[in-house]
Structures are given as C-alpha cells and as structure tokens.
Length: 619
Ligand SMILES: Cc1cc2nc3c(=O)[nH]c(=O)nc-3n(C[C@H](O)[C@H](O)[C@H](O)COP(=O)(O)OP(=O)(O)OC[C@H]3O[C@@H](n4cnc5c(N)ncnc54)[C@H](O)[C@@H]3O)c2cc1C
View 1 (cartoon, rainbow, N blue to C red):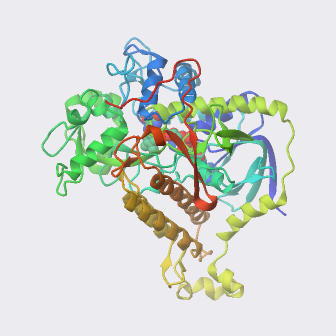
View 2 (cartoon, rainbow, N blue to C red):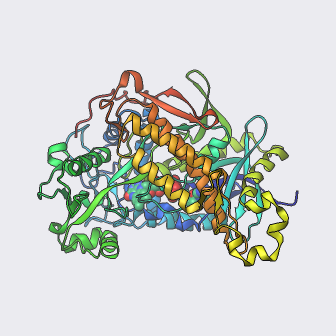
View 3 (cartoon, rainbow, N blue to C red):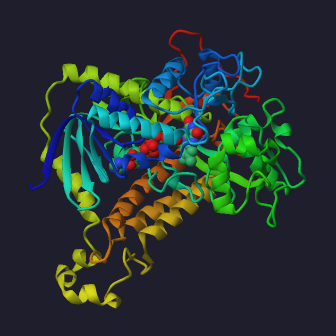
C-alpha cells in the first residue's frame, strides 16, 4: 500500500488546550510527539473561551481548594467522581501560576496579583457567601491560554500536522490503539501515524444542536472514533445549555457578565432569578438558570414581539467596567445585534454549549473500559483529555470556569502518565493491515460518487463533469423513495431534531421520537454521496466525515437520555422531575454496537478527604 507512514512516541489528536498542554509536557521530556489538528492550532475552540478558569487562589475573597471541590461536586449534581474532582481542585492554583509563567497575561488587581471574578455555583466555606474564583484575562482568557501554550510547544519542538483530519484509530487484535490515519485537507494525501501511545483531545460536539455557542469544527470526531473502536461513551445524556447565548443566534455572552454584576430580567422588568435561587440569584449553576429562563418564557414572561427571550442587563455596570473587563462581549453584541450593552440590555436564550459526557478516563487520562460487572481496565497506551473525555469532573452539570481548568490539569496529567508508560513500552507494535484498510474504507466511501458506485464509466466521461443536469447537485443523492439530500441538509435536520427532541426539558415520548428520527437520518446518510468531484474542495469531504461522526454522537446522546428516568443536572425529565439517587446515581456507558447501554458506579470516594454525600441542591 502506497501511503506515507510516520512513527512517533505519542500521537496527540487535537491542538486545543488539552492537546497542547499534554504535548508540551511530553516534548519537554524529549518524547517524539505529533499533534494532528484539523484547523491551525490557535483556531481550536479553546481560543473562544471568554470568562476564565477556576482556582482557589483567594486573591479577592477567602478561598480554599476544598470549597472549590465541594462546589464542583454539588454542581455535578453528585454524578462527578470525587477522586478526580479532588485532584483537579487541588492542582488548580499551581496550574494557574504555571500558565502565568508560560506567558498568559492574566488581568490584575491593583496590588498586582491575578484578578478573580465571581462565577456561577461558587461559594465560600461549603455553601456560604459567593466566592470569586475565576482567573481571567479580560473576557478573552482562552485566547491568551491557547496562544501561550502553542508558543511553548513551538519552543519545545513539538511536531505539528496542521490542517490534517484524523479519520480513525488504528488497532491490533488485542484492542491496543497504535495510532491513526489522517488526511491532509489541502492535498488529499493520506498518512498513517504510528504511535506507541495515542491521546484523543478533539474537544466537544456542540454542533449537534442548531443553536449553539461552539465553533463549526466541534463535531465530536474523537468521541466517534472511540465508539467505532468499540469504546463506550460515558454520560452522554448530560449536555449543557448555557443560559446566555444571543437569542436566535447562539453566540456566547459569558457568565462573567453576571459575575461582574449583570442580571437577567423578564418582560415585566423583574429580576426573576431571585425567585428560583434566592441566595445565589443570577449566579446559580447553569442548569438552574437555563431552566428558569425556559420557564419564564413558557409562562408568557419572555421579551420581544414573540416573547421568546429574556434580557441580560449590564448597562448599570458603567462603561469603565464594561470596556475593561468585558470588551469582547461588547464587540459581540454590537457586531451581531447592533446593541451597545453600555446603553441597552442584550436579548438572551439558553444555548447548547458543553458536552459533559465523553470518552471514559481515570484521573491519569487513561481510557478505561468495563471488563466485567463493576470492574474496569485501562486500555494500554490510549489516553483522552479535555472536553471529549469524561474523567468525570463535571458529572451532570459543569460549573463555569471548570473546563479551562480541566483541560490543562488533565492534559498535563495524561502527559506525565504517558512519559512513565513509554519507559516500560519503548517499542512500536506491529500494525495489522486490516486495521488500515477499514479506516481507509471509511475515507474512500466519500471519494466515490453514486455514479462510480453504480456505473464507473459514466463518472470518468467528460460529459459527467460538464453537464450538471445529468447528476444531482453536488453532495446530493437519491434514497429509495427518490428523495435527495445534501450533507448540509442532513446536518441541519440532525441539529433540529436534537434541539427539539433532546433540549433543556425532556420527556419519554419526545425522546423516543428523537431516537427514531436520528436513526432515520443515519439511514439517509447511507445513500448520500459527494457527486461533483471536479468542483468540491476537500472540506466538503471533511464535512461528510464530520456528519457521520455527529450522527453517532447524536444517537449516543438521545439513547442515553431516553434511558435515564430521573432529573439530574442538565438532564431535566418533565416526567421524572426528581433526582433518584437510589436507582440512578451511576454513570451510563453507551456502546455503538447494538446501541447498547450499561452502567457503572460513581467514584464517590475522594483521595484524602471525606466524601461529600448527596444533598438537595439549593442555590
Ligand atoms: C464560546 C465558548 C466560551 C467558553 N468559555 C469558557 C470559559 O470561560 N471557561 C471555561 O472553563 N470553559 C469555557 N468554555 C469551554 C472550554 O473552552 C472548552 O471546553 C475547552 O476549551 C475545550 O478544549 P479542548 O482542548 O478539549 O478542545 P478544543 O479547544 O475544542 O480543541 C479541539 C481540537 O481537536 C482538533 N480536532 C477535532 N477533531 C479532529 C479531527 N478529526 N482531526 C484532527 N483534529 C481534530 C481541533 O482541530 C482542535 O485542535 C467555552 C466554550 C465556548 C464554546
């Protein structure tokens, strides 16, 4: 087979904060590291993170990692694993200082120490007064972090494959992962990257929903690769809807706005969060605020001609605070709405934001799979970190500011574990040809038009290219009933189904309709092709591969949501309103083969401190 092969100690798939932090750890330890990214590294979604990163530095209010841990466990609605949460919260302060030394220009207090803003779900002294725990670089924290991490990687001589699309993992019969096949988006060249260890850090899947805050590249590719490799996805029913996306458009207005003193009002001008969360008000955790907005609108207290959004008011903060602490938000609002928030409130609505579920890992970033009832085992040499992974520190609901923390803490931890693994596994394993063939088959599927499939001579004739009437429009095909689809149409259909059948509030009937609808979309995909190869860019093929991935993630999400008959965190079942710890304090695991679910216990035992037992969540 005539494909370029390259060999590395570690293949990192994804150049967001998680991938870059892991790669840096490895390159600094002289491991030979390849980072593959489908976009130039500094365009990864981490760049868009606004509000900041949590760490109990105590620069503004008294603070303590143990309080941070309590808030995270409570925020997770007791589904988070307490060993991983303890590890993350303890590591947070030194992680921020390390980033500062890498060059992240954090905002400052007058005394020179790092500025910290209050964020949702943060408290002092285990549920007491509001804490200010989020370290920020104005409202462009992710931008500052990603650029610093990229520069450090260049300095450490990490090898980058920029604008390469990872198609599938490569495995041997034992199930060990030995690298991946990637596709050069510019030239169509395929490359086999063989690696002794592989880290999946491909970010979230916000593109599942029509209105979302995510970059168009957030299509859950790594999670789908894991599914195809036989690895289950954990807790996929928990998808976070951020309370304040720009109404109808989805762009994020950071929680930092409410941290700085902004608040939500309904059409009566009422600050309604006082009714839902008397203590924390607008800084209750995200699931609580999103539900409150949805109820206000449902009960006819929405704003605007269609009463379909609420207002985020910040004009009372004054222009100085807005220009200094929230300049990006002002830009976003003026660009997309023509509204200057110094003068007027911003119309907002809950928007799909963050994938709490993902590839199951332990706190070292090792991918773990069940090998019997209640017993799990790490897959040797396979790691995952960042939004695509499920450690699980966010459980059923992530706290704002905890993801930027998660990606650097577990990116670093995975890097360290890989360094140790490489010491005892110095050699590459033999890569079986079958594994390469099946990954290539998936890629080739989108290089063949229906005409090639049905009558190869037709596609080679010049008439085929020159007379469009002979073919369907680009990326179009016919299914059995003669309907035609395009990749973008099918994606839009999937996004609408997910938004309407698996949104903020869920019920049995609607979720069941969702499962059938996504299955139908999957069937339609089978008869969709890219037809006009003379004029499409490789990006059209990449979009087709991404759609395949999204459909698998959509199925995982809606099937897991249908099965969970309780309300916990972001998963709100109208027909099962209460959390049910007796039956459901467990993680779900979705397997692609047979669309099967199994469950595993929550790791409630912390590392050094007492477990926080489940309590009713009141903010
Ligand atoms: C608008 C917005 C604001 C946010 N603000 C905050 C905040 O203030 N605080 C906070 O804690 N969290 C915030 N979050 C969440 C947080 O930013 C993300 O969860 C986090 O940055 C994800 O990092 P990551 O490294 O896991 O993935 P990403 O940064 O998404 O990077 C994924 C990488 O994988 C690569 N990739 C994906 N698929 C493939 C493939 N098939 N082949 C090759 N490469 C691939 C991409 O090219 C990219 O390099 C925000 C999220 C959004 C969307």
